[in-house]
Figure 1 (cartoon, rainbow, N blue to C red):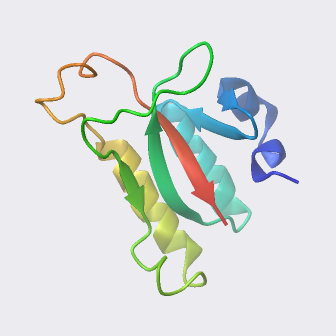
Figure 2 (figure 1 turned 90 degrees about the horizontal axis):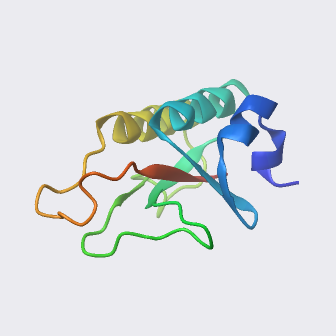
Figure 3 (figure 1 turned 90 degrees about the vertical axis):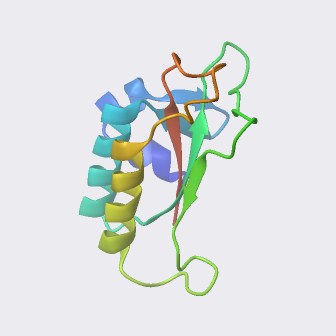
Length: 114
């Protein structure tokens, strides 16, 4: 089963869905990480999406995303520490000031979870 389907109904309803993937606004994304932490899920990546009617737009002028630092060496490790870092990325995320095409748009956060 897809980990997204295991989330509480309010977080499922808050998601912008594309296929089996999902992304959330900042507040809901933080709540998703809290839920995952309570169940032992580990966030190993965060990608920024812009919702649209057909498929997510991935801002491409700059790379916007986060990868758990130890991912390339170790899929194990402390899920709470990885989730803390993912939370920090989401909480402090801001567009690059020179990326004027997206400055006024709300980012959605797509999570990669193991």
